[in-house]
Length: 379
Image 1: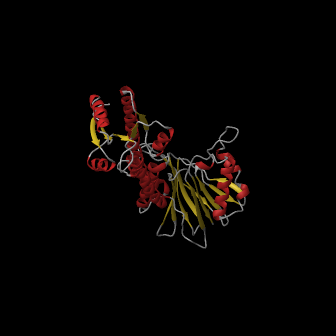
Image 2: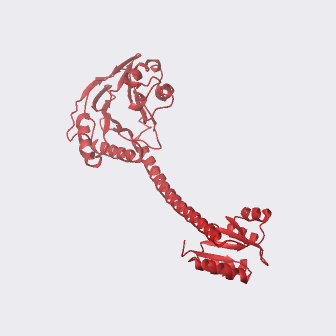
Image 3: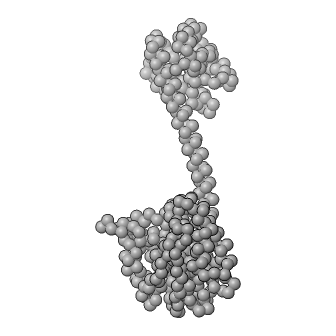
């Protein structure tokens, strides 16, 4: 391994001559120091790949020099090999404990010392490469953490947890991402006539990309809420606005308008499973069909209405609550989820949503692998 620079620290001129001649013959660059103090002066200005260090020297012994080298951040990674005429076990142990990588006793075999030097240079080179890779990984992790923090802030605008307070209705939401950030959407906009538009959706995929795309969908929902149109047309406008930006994703969604004065909802599905009305313990799926957003240029949607009455619960939920494996290696499924709901029908607000989530995590034995989101409107 030629063209590497070795610093020889030895107060013996004979050793300096013999060792430096051997190193130069094997194509190494050689720097020579006769003491620890002069060695540190050399190291301030020169790049050194390996140090050969005499064990016994005046003023500052080899062990003291080695310890000082290992305390200095500039020299801590330079491999140190001791050279000594004393091969006692105590000396070898002391040298290794001081931070040396090897200990060679005089008289030495030239082939052996060159082999050891090359071995430790290779090890040092690999450690340097590993450290560089580690720094790159740490840098990437820092970038990812920064992106995740941005995504988390975006997520706070995507999944709304606070809603208008009214004597006529109560709105509660629940959200639990499978990772640090997710792709589910819970958003609403109040209209001038007192009604509320709600946008509930689930992006295909997870993580930062899904969160960022969800943010774009919510922005499109906010902008398009300015238009005087029904849920069906509203979904089509959102699809047109986002399609060119979301080529590798699709969104299953529900967009509905709740009119508090009449307790009526007008809704349209875009590939999402039905929302439910819970009335006197009965579970009522609201019918409807429609294509997910961002799959077809023109999506086929329908618009329906449903009349709520006092005491009803309107319940929306993501497929993370039922698309998981049970012990029988079968999907728990939508029907299984609906059948589990009646026992929670007397609960209200966050207690209702949290109890359902806890039950599903219990049934799945914590094997739920998708974001969990729910929206509840009680009238």
